[in-house]
Image 1 (cartoon, rainbow, N blue to C red):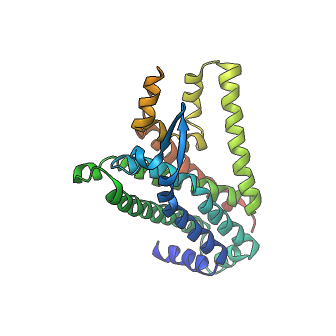
Image 2: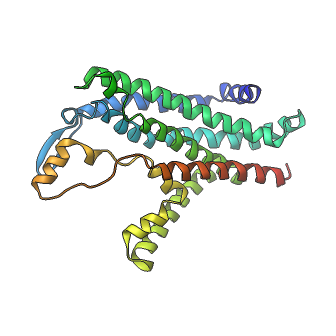
Image 3: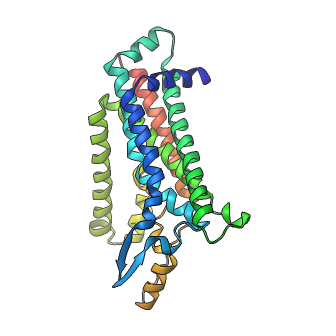
Length: 278
């Protein structure tokens, strides 16, 4: 496996665009600290984000995982471009001529996906830990390392999403078309949800239950939005007679669904490559 991973790292080493995009991605994660300076108004009351405890342990794990996951599209471009370049520069055919099997080729790409997700998760952990140690009101050991399941969800989300991108790259062979298809699939899921909710069942709960088995929706369900979890937001909502009853935990079912989709994406990638005449 190390041999396969080393092959991919050598390709990334000489891919300037992949290196630039990856650097931008990790730099943007560090910019999460700038969120502290944001001010917003809710129900006529002004809030400064830094005063709402977003960098408090253990909330910071939830907030930063959610914010960083939005940036995953940068690394998605890298994954798709790595596949597209294999066809454009005929390195895939050369690798097969040199003795690399199609199964090993897909495995090498999946190992790259795991590496990107692992490095990103570790980087997010370090950034969040530093921010928390500087700004959190709670620094007890037990509190600091509670709610780390959000980092697990972040890792699973990246692996699933990058595996989807890998599959699309193998399927259509072109970066632009793969990214375009990703957007189209997002629209398709949105339309299906609207049809289920407004035309078929007219029940948002039942529609949501069905939609949780779709790939992008299952990935989205891993980390719920954290803003309404803030104490200040909930206090204002209570004063207005509203109440947030959302469950912010990481659903085990969503993790299982994403892992199943990950397996399917990798298997389908191999199946396509196996049948394709190169």
